[in-house]
Image (tube, rainbow, N blue to C red; front, side):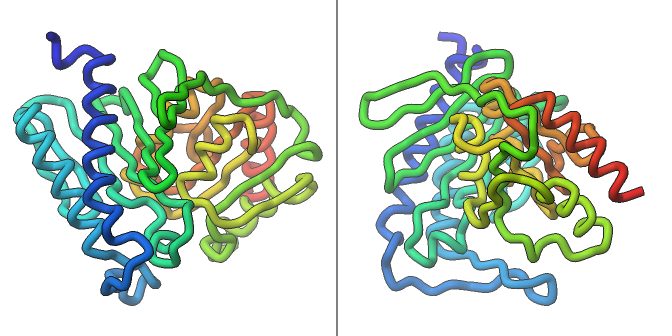
Length: 268
């Protein structure tokens, strides 16, 4: 077995995401301490579930791919001897998690030093997994059911559903201008969702996601998923968003191009 073949790597990523889910679920909708690691930057909760899940993922990677690097939200960046680095958010959407809501998931990406090669999004309570390799198909599975995902055509903002986690994240005049350029005239704007905003875009249920202030572990697992489903995800200038920051994702490439132009004009 070639453990560096994309299909094998994706299967491994799905396995470790499920293992992380088993570490998380005993703490979901349970009375657990919540630590605020945000400080002056704002409320940023973390729990024993976040840390336990990342520890499980790291241990599995170290045993299977000891030369690979590991970059996680909770335990930092351990560089490897190869170009490959696993980028992990053990619970994306911890705010939803501590409220007992369902818009959270484990995110796992593998970056080859140039781009994310694969991404897995796993929600253990719901039991669904979203996954893709760069250049392949985007998939969804739950309880033995499996389907191929595709974004939907929506070249006109007036027909679009726009999602963002929290409009209060757009604080600076530039951020507010960009947010206004993307949402003004949209059919519907919805808040909340974290990583689920992007999975619903890949499923063809949402048309646009705009966010700011993301980290690499917030977005890298989602890039292969969106692109494999037929969408486009970049920063607000049309460049790579793999390191986070400002992110614009669209299911329809034509709408993405239009919104980049609108953002550029609004922020000029």
